[in-house]
Amino acid sequence: MDAAYNLARWLTGNEPDAQDVVQQAFLRAFKFFGGFRGGDSRSWLLRIVRNSFYDWVGKQRPLDTSFDEDLHGIATESPAPDAALLEKADKQLVHEAIGQLPAEYREVLVMRELEDLSYKEIADVADLPIGTVMSRLARAREQLRQGLLERMRRD
Amino acid sequence: MIELLHGLLDKELDPVRSLEAEQHLKECPACARRYEEEQVLRKIIAGGSLYYEAPRSLSRNVRSALRLASRAEAAPVSRSWSWDLGRLWLRARLLPIAVAALVLLLVLPSLVGPSTENRLAQEIVSAHSRSLMADHLTDVTSTDQHTVKPWFSGKVTFSPPVPNLSSQEFPLIGGRLDVLQEQPVAAMIYQHRKHFINLFIWPSTHGDSREKLSAQRGYNLIHWTQGGMNCWAVSDVNRADLQQFAQLVKAVLEKE
Image 1 (cartoon, rainbow over the protein chains, first blue to last red):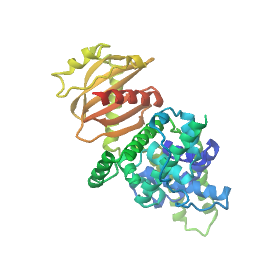
Image 2: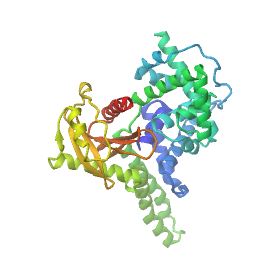
Image 3: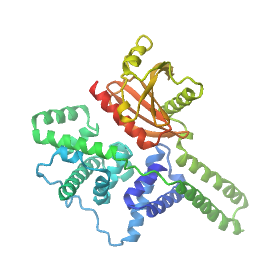
């Protein structure tokens, strides 16, 4: 239940919507209970939570543009940021910076760092090839790092 | 290359590529610096208590939504006389069972076929509650790590690290010999405000792993593998405090 809520909460960005998404997910899980083929019930549920979220987003924003991997590429050379500066980032800042990431990055990051899922498990949940999980994660962290450093330099 | 660094960071590379990436880190200062930053970043995320736990109301809401849904499915069926009566009976009977099964499977996964890890967690929670119950918290009572550590020699076949965390609000209370999975383990007892934390340590055959949080019978657990040792901490302190405790222990073990 915590895993489902955590993912939904990070995807929707607020509590009431996260509750809705989780509730929808459980209703779906109930409906498609027959589709459960054993195995890891957490991955199965997270997958449904994720699908429920994207359906919910679809309803909220019907003209959502599809995600373009190239547009969100990794900048090859970043200005020398330092580890010492990053160490000073506080929870609030990290929270904001993750919240700013596109949902496609946010979800892999949350599943990896907070749920501690393996690449294989994330690939199953998000229906992506493992290679894409690895590259999205790399880009997610890159963008998060940039975002954090920008915020910290601004302050 | 940058993607490989992340694979390395997540311990997801096969041995060949892993060696390749490590070799590259030695040769390329830019990537090495980047790798270090990524490690810092991960630590910030892990230590930032960014995990959202489900609000209490959610579990209740989900259960009532599921009940409603099962009734809604059963209702039109029962009004339709054209339905085969046998099937109707079956559906009406089976739906609540399906709901119950789903709730069991998803809300209480610990009840359905506990994994090895889960069984170990149960054993650890039992050991923890036993230690508090039977006035047998410590075999050796001392706040001095240099008393506790030598006490273990001759009792276990390894030398457990005994971190001293008194300056970080986790004073050492003492040590105890315990048995988990039929082997002797070292238990160190720490106090945090009015709560006790049992830290179990014994040798592991696995490589290092990141800390994993879980909960069982109202206790929080966190476990990881580091430097060839299994480490499990269990307590009734909240998740964030236990996580902080684990981070402190890890930092001490790193230096050993």
